[in-house]
Length: 473
Image (tube, rainbow, N blue to C red; front, side, top):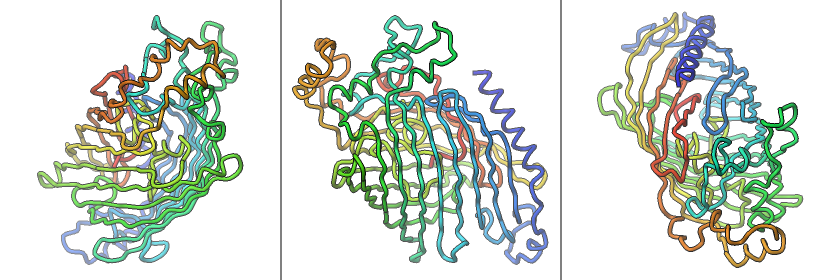
């Protein structure tokens, strides 16, 4: 834990060092600003940028290293703390073989009266979490993946390989009185495969190599739970559209207001996965209630994702749809973006709902040069709930095992799937924790969260640290 705290302090200092060399911008524009009760020191103008190591930590993905750059154009400061244009670049890799290669653009002023967001990303993941279907209906045995455990099978037992290419363009327009229309188009390209043990074992001593045994993903393929088409991934162009309401005072470090949205996403498939056409419904409600001035804010989010029509492959169901991408990847349920402290993709289903509740305390504010900083603290509770489970038929799975995996002892099937307790499918998954935030100019937020599940079936470990950019919502 001490190493993680030291890393956080070094990272914060590095960012302060780099941003202290940001562009001064057009200060004459501030002098022309006629807004009452606005001091010059309160407004950021012109271009500001930070170039720094892309360092982070995620309990699911490991330690991240690389480089990132974030460029903001505040113009004449008339829209501060909003910005005219934002450009984001990142190239990074993690110790658990997860990569980030991303370029993103965001602006509310490129097209007057509209917001446009463009994201191009390539996200390879050699050890992507795969814990089966339907939450508690699938047994999670943490000892199978821990080398020091007597039950150890493989560190890669609950993993698969997933490479994702994503291109998305989203736009919205103002209808009036805080209401907006939303539309977007894009494509997701997934390559799914068993863990590449040869690649991971290359150059390692024999005692450190991963054993050549089937993981849960391999068993799901042999047992017919994963169809041959979806087991390998596919390309899925999509369109989505909907309506939203937003009267927040600011996008990041929000103090008051609410943001609600509802939209539909149509996914198409071609090639081997051409039959995987599906229609997905999403809705979310985020509310920010000031409790004491701008120092204490009560914030909560309620959200759902449901399969309306068609049969989406499992990897699309694990993708939590968003109208505007602000984080590298949204996955549900479980993990840094939906249910902190619960294993990533632990609560896999066709449709689900979740909630996040937290108090946000601003501890202090200070300036470094022309940049405005603040430190925050936020205790939180997260909850996830399955609404549309996968159908796991015991007789069908048993027949597939006898045909395709004859060496498997059927008496051990209950160690993987609990068929006679399907009521557990709909049991809520809870977690809780606390976060530390370092904010610059009310736009850049460095977030460090620690969380733990209320039930060990969701995660045996208590070392669930997430170091990210931005609030989770």
